[in-house]
Length: 369
Image (cartoon, rainbow, N blue to C red; front, side, top):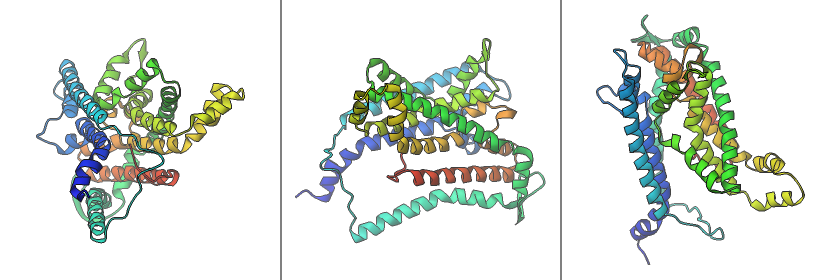
């Protein structure tokens, strides 16, 4: 009989490797593309996303050519990592027999306690910054807002609503429109890829993944350069922000829609087609409703990432298109940390509510991207 270590390294780990590689790619690309964290607390460390932004909109002078060169290097690095991950994932490809699915088993008593304790501690530590953020949002600040003093009040929230109230409806407005556009494109692409698979549609699917490996600042700069002159001028409008955020988030929604559609039997649509129902009616009256659970779950997850988008929005926004994320950044850049904490707390409330909706609509309760 194989030992526990032998089963883990020779059976369990290889079976988990595709998921591990996919998550490692996501972590690497998210770290490469992260803008807010290194910009605000990464003083002394130069990252691709921040350096691109500083070179493009530098306070002491901009260098668009240098920003473009950095962008190309960033895309090449993430592209190489993406191709390596795809190659490794192909070598760890497995197909499970539906008649013998993997069953969950409860761990032994001592091992079960260790796993639960580890999970609770990990989640608690990850939540501490959010808890402290909400706590600081209720603390009093000095007149400048840069120093916290003794006592508690709602002044930070009052200041936020006085100066940046428009960020709340703008966030919802941009988020809803972006979400509708993202869902529409994702459903269409997933249908073409799964149900009408050919070279053209598979190419579309591959091209839709390109934004996945491109930093948001690169997308923002590209859109500014493209739509900053006639015949189409979109710079400074809400529409260009919707386009940028949609481009950034469409890969996640497409992958979720494809995975959902692959689980729907083709026989249902074939039966409807044999009765003389047109393909358009089959798509909107049969296929899409059957995909609804996956679409809703994927849409809510996309909504969360849409709410927190910063890297491309910071290059494209104007006074009329300031979102909660941008409002938080503006307050921090002005040294008003109390109002920034209030703005971030409101954004946290929105994302928490979105997660609650996800678990309410999702049947499997698994949070995946």
